[in-house]
Amino acid sequence: MKDEIPLEVHTSLDIQELLDKIGFENGLLIETICSTENPDGSPHSAPIGVKRAGMLLSIDKLFKDTITFENLVRSGYILINLLDDIETFYLATFSDLPREEYDKSYSTRIPPLRRSNAFIEAELVNFRDRDNFVSVELSISGILIRKMKPCFFTRCKHAVLESLIHATRVPVFRRIDPKEAGSLMKLILHYRDLVSRICPEEPYNRIMNGIVNRLRDTQI
Ligand SMILES: Cc1cc2nc3c(=O)[nH]c(=O)nc-3n(C[C@H](O)[C@H](O)[C@H](O)COP(=O)(O)O)c2cc1C
Image 1: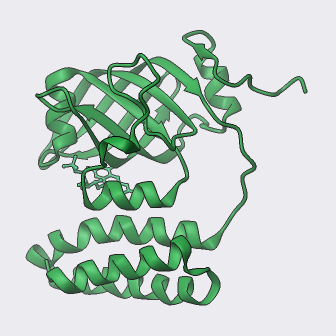
Image 2: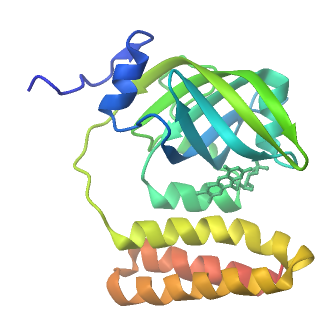
């Protein structure tokens, strides 16, 4: 087929065309897992929203109290994993990903995640200070499309992803705005009920229960 993207092609040419073809349209915000280098050279990964701005990428809101921010400013380098594996998002949200979650076979500064469908290597162009967060501009130095697989919608994936994002905010709002924390908890419980009705136990229902239990246990 004419429009098919060849697998395992590393390219620094036609970046805009390639981004268009994989559906990363201009102006679109996608949820990724960003890997950065710790001072000791080990990788650190966290879910982060990345937006396309033509040839460039941006992280419109990167909180300053994150390891990702520290690492990015120090090293100037970031590897953006594109994947729809909810289990990897879950692990990356609440803990450091173990070494076995990274691939060994790529000669990139940071190994990509084992379950990523594609990854983008990028360099820090600049960042703008906006109080407790920064807006970051990145230039793309390489893209690798690794997997092509059938894609389809599932309400569960969306529900769990939304819940993960809310779960990272609940601890903050419990300190500064308990009412907002309560509203976010209500949304998470709503998604938990939805997932328990329409999704099989693995992995969606288990992860949703894990999120709720973590927030209940710690009361952070
Ligand atoms: C789907 C998803 C998207 C997120 N997007 C962002 C983001 O754009 N900016 C940000 O600062 N944190 C974002 N977070 C929260 C961070 O992943 C979380 O705070 C994490 O702990 C980052 O901090 P670290 O670099 O210290 O690990 C997101 C979380 C999830 C689950």
